[in-house]
Image 1 (cartoon, rainbow, N blue to C red):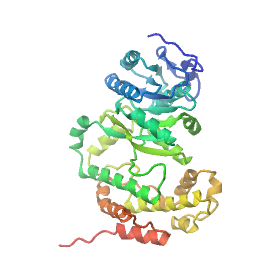
Image 2 (image 1 turned 30 degrees about the vertical axis):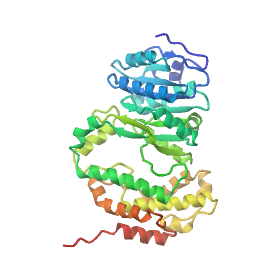
Image 3 (image 1 turned 60 degrees about the vertical axis):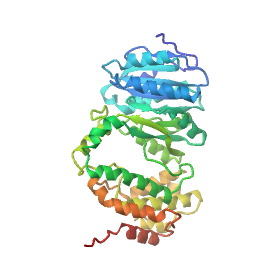
Image 4 (image 1 turned 120 degrees about the vertical axis):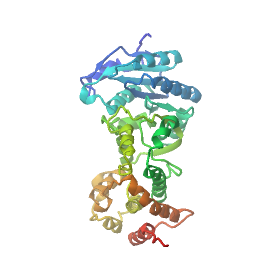
Length: 413
């Protein structure tokens, strides 16, 4: 394949390897590039490492979704530190597709050879190739996007979202035998997470992200405005969790983050993951039994309720440009002060500082077994708010409501 750099590209992509945070990296083969037109609306960025088996289905699904969307876009595949045929297969599939693409194989120095750096470089390259008003999307090489995925992401952006987090399904064929070995705590966690999302949405509603929503914030399905990607400072170069850190940075700046159930992908459910600390590590821990920790966003029902209630009350004060409720802060164990002015213009930053100062909001990770114990209380909390149930107006009302819903029922007989 002939590698031509089009006029819209600001420089040879290899030159990025001489700049932070990629300094010391090297190209393992020339960039394979074709047909990037000026005004390209979007690009899909995919990091890949030793994914020769998965990259074919991944790219075929991406190509199918792009064709269904009928809007000008391209694909960037960043192959890093691979020892198999991932690069050659990606080149062949994209060349045959006739779509705009860039495939680059690089070797990162060992400290940089991680998912965060690879996704960062893929997105940086994609950002340089699309219209400044365009959209960046990213998925994983072991993931198959749905046919309507590109369309759903662009629709979310068109409706005003700054960042769209897609829904991530696990491969049912791969998952079946593994899930059969999981304890009851794993099954309880799925319901608990869904209820806690609903609890947060009812206590701290956000017009741009109404129910139903999910809580997936994974690199398998993200879409972000190009301008917002630059504003946040790019994808963090973390060995693991770069996707969640990126979404958290957007939330901290009060950007419109939506959790779309229409932008769906299916990802692998394997125990030999590429990233230490990723999904494969989590699955291996959970196979050992329900003493394993639940997801790091899961916490006891009473603490989840207090967190969501206080955040909703304080967000209301901030958006109405009213002084922060001193009673709410004191209920969190925080001495009232100049929270808003001290943290700048964004509520997300203000709230993060309040969480850091509050002894009652310290993150308390719980086991899968504890999730099953907390599930009845979470059910009662959410049920009490459905159908227009009143949201507590004062800290005392909130305390009584939480205590009532979280009180353990007395068993009889």
